[in-house]
Image 1: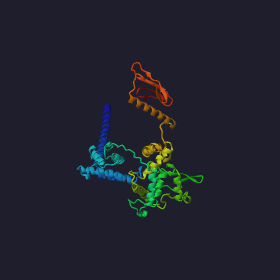
Image 2: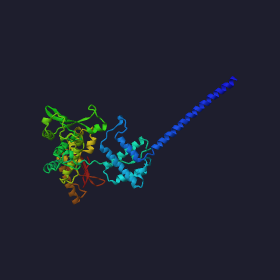
Image 3: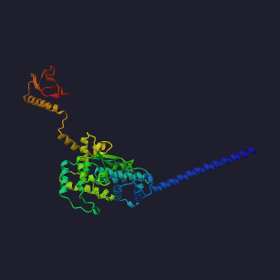
Image 4: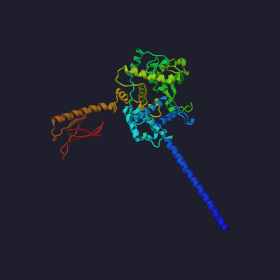
Length: 453
């Protein structure tokens, strides 16, 4: 009896355990199905809805504070330029854009996008930029669960060849002269238009662009308080590295990166002309100090500097395509020469890779060395060397014209010395050998001369 009760109790316990296990397995299965439905519903989202969500994300709607990113308006503009190409190609291939789902993106669609992007005939740099924006959008789609795998990542980058054309001194002087002699009409800054190109401070802006060699942010944010003195005289400019700090999201003065800019003789004259003696140490902008509107300084002033440079430079009819950035390239090219190949010392870059590969004008470097009388070997060795080579050339020419008898080799006056002719017993060819102190051992066969170092 006791034994049967024990068996029944054990069976009951086993039954309960089995039931609990079955319930647990069922719960797991149900959760998987629910999760699958949720994922499937996410992947059925329309592309237009996903783009709207991404737009909100870019402007930090619903984004936790610790991962928010403050973006320029140009960022969203370039992004939707890329999405506009995608939209155009989807419609162009007979697909209803309003019902196109994110999950419909595949290699074929990316092929459409590539054809449309290539058809715009963008420069390689612009092509790579649009490629980067569409890839960022695709990564976000995957993070949200709207897309299972990446497709746009298969778009290959194009080689971006740097066209570093620096403005020359002659072009620079002519540019300033034509702006001063033929100034254009200008509006009040509050009423400035997108295509406007002249303001009374345009010449000063171009001068600062060359003498500071900075980016546009450096020029428009340059204040008298950034000038550091040494012995009562301006020594250098200490200014924030705006590009670096924005990329690294550095906001406090302790963590921000600063760079030093030397004050050239011409820059010193510009500062004096701008009223440095009265404004030293003041928190006032050197360029167009009367304009304090953040919007005008950030957008209008750079636009006028770029448009003004381009407008007046075209009047010079040089046949070259330069931009305001050519001023910075001239500065860094000069820095490369004057620092012995280390332009980063004066440009503010962490290394020489970027300035040398993207800013230094190699043509100007070559021209400079030509003007300086460049020689491969020391000059006192080069001229005697070429004088002797000239004599050898004359001997060779005469020998070819006269067709000398190889059975008789007279003593040759080569390099101002007698080169002993030795009759070779087997080949019957004359061999001469001489050790010249300038270029080493000289050996050859008549009638030609071969120099072997």
